[in-house]
Amino acid sequence: MAPILNLIQSIPDSPESLLDFITNLLLTHGYLVVLIGAALDNFGLPASGDVVLFAGGWISNQGKLSLPAVMFSGFGGALISDNSVYWIGRIGGRPLVNRVSKMRFLRFLISQKNLAKVENYFDTHGGKTVFLGRFGPGLRSMTPLFSGVTRMSYPRFLPYNLAAVVLWAVGYTMVGYVFGQYWSTLLTVAKSAGYGFVVLVILIGGFYAYRRRSNRQG
Image 1 (cartoon, one colour):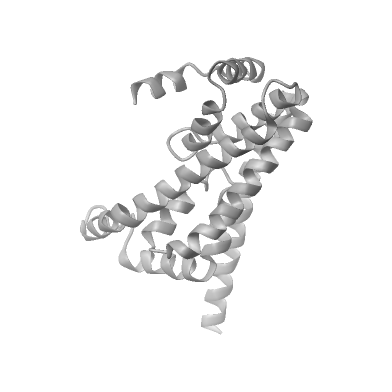
Image 2: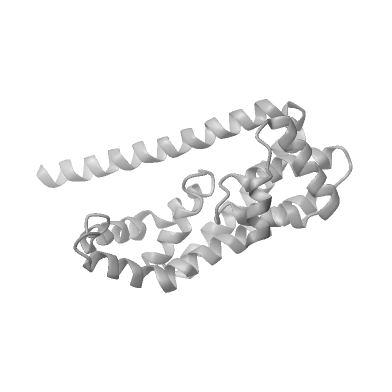
């Protein structure tokens, strides 16, 4: 764990320095960097997968890496991390939620009533949520986790997750391949688009909840 923390602390802030940093890592350690970067999306380093795929795609454009291998490494890292988080939520998340809901001073965070609402939501919209959640930095780790906590069936979770991970790995690598020369602009647009996507999902969810409440009152 300490080496990973040290690596995170050593990541530079400026876009140009970040590209040089990731390029050196990729040329030194190869596709393992893409695999780990994609996996760390769900374990403490949001959007790391986006960045390594952009960089990997651009370096592939220069002939220094294999484009299919970058895509496959990103796919593997994302698939491993998403499914690990799902099973963490499935095995350990529900008992933890049950304990929290019984603690008087923590009951305001989550209750059995709120959990039931989340379960109903995933029963109806779980597949779409799993797919779309992969493309929102703030949703990427939470979606598999709550899919597991609400005990969404794994045969239902996996196809949507596979489709999302394939599209994400191929799409983001190709964006880096084509637009990597505009690195600073690419990072800015990707960040804005990612958070804009999260806001859009929240607005849609709020509208859906409002409409359901209005229908019940009507």
